[in-house]
Length: 236
Image 1 (cartoon, one colour):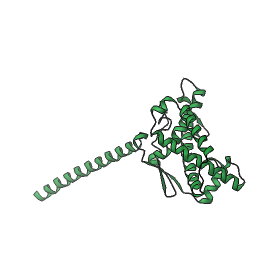
Image 2 (tube, helix red, strand yellow):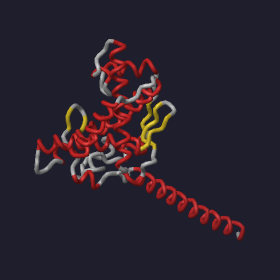
Image 3 (spheres, helix red, strand yellow):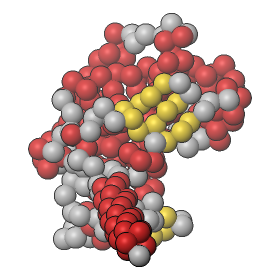
Image 4 (cartoon, helix red, strand yellow):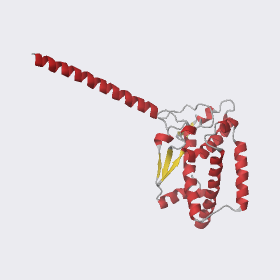
């Protein structure tokens, strides 16, 4: 009888331990799931990998210019759409996607495009002429002047990072023009959303893998701007 009583007590203890273990595991899993769905503070995660292009990893720091540029570009249109509530434009659903998410995709696509063409420019020994350097300085001036004050206040990286990105873009564009000339195609055809660029990617067999654990947690439209865009990550 005593042996049976001890066995029952042990079984009860084991059941309690198992129940608490399961509850704890569920709690941890829920916490991790919740944390994985929280938006990242861009400026605090600059070294996080956003996308891998072949073997090269591009971080949020590398993409900062494109986020800044595209947020400014969309906000400009948003204020024309509704000067009192620019958020309304960001929330529009068109072409099977929200404006916010389309802009986010565009920023990523431009970053990958310019990374590839910048490296191709270096491989082809391209450099900026004195006139092109002067043009670059003017573009930088125009870019900074066009930014909204709130964007300058919320700039996620140093000015130098943005300026260097613009230098790389200038070289990428120079290669884009060279490629168009050599192939008899148009410059626009080799833009980030161009057909010829798409074919070029296939020919080069470029492997592009977006790190969704990072990129999906970027609240695009609220990195350098402030209007709390209400698009859930499930929709991303």
